[in-house]
Length: 192
Image (cartoon, rainbow, N blue to C red; front, side):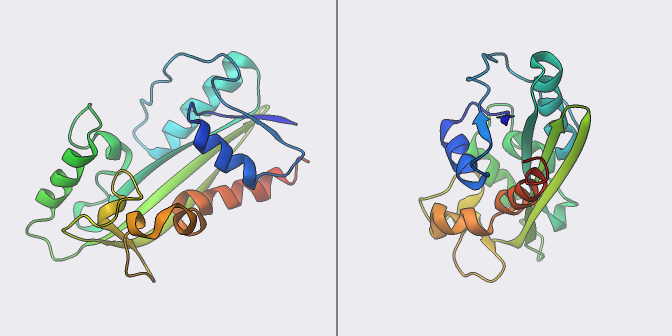
């Protein structure tokens, strides 16, 4: 069975392919000739994930899944959430995003937060979504070189190191995306 993962990132594609049953051939947006930017106009992670998955299904006639992730900070009522990558502006500047988070938390004592991923799956007309969450807390210093985005300031529950210090192997086992992917893989086993 062929399945499209709505991404242009070959490394992300490789990581996900390793998690899927051997009977599934995973294709990227590049593999199907989808070069247009799929606008994420949703107001929630779920809406954005479905926008991408439905675009591929409706335009190319292929089964597809897509994901969207965000950092949700308790003291900020879940912000930055769906705009995590653009929190400090449309340029998607990781450093500026972290500085804005620190500024917003300056007078707050609650540093609890979570990373959340939603994966939307479109198999023909059937649509399902899967959620992965990892709770933790934010720190007011950057630690580690192995992550991206907010990874250097997020310590997952049960650990003393940030995602950027833990590195890809550990992060990929405990992260929000890993948890959502596990639920997706279990669902895909029903189709194979």
